[in-house]
Image (cartoon, rainbow, N blue to C red):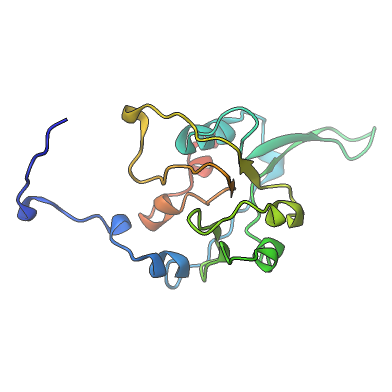
Length: 181
């Protein structure tokens, strides 16, 4: 609760906090991100979903990663299908956004600029994977739980998996990948 002055020589700059908005829209140079999920190894532990929810302060029905029980026929065994945003090569959500709030970076990650999103939900309707959610309320996050590396969520905008861009820029994997048993 106090204002403290710190000598700038005592502050080390982190790479992830020192990028311009333009750089964040362009992506990480010389990288191309994809996620491969081996369905034969998914055991429905839901650690991926819970880690994503904790990291991004998601609750209730507003989850970015759903895991579905699938069965191809009566004769086959069921399997689990995690369904995050697919970060499509040619994302229809980018094409329909009237204000260019949804964009695809050079490294393959599809993101939403919360400051530009007008909440029209065109991208929600256009997504063939139903991977987008409309955030109708501002989540209440206790100050001690706020992660300065994760942007705070905004009311009245569309949200989706971000491929944990704050982590990938630092060289770590998305939360769902890190916790998968």
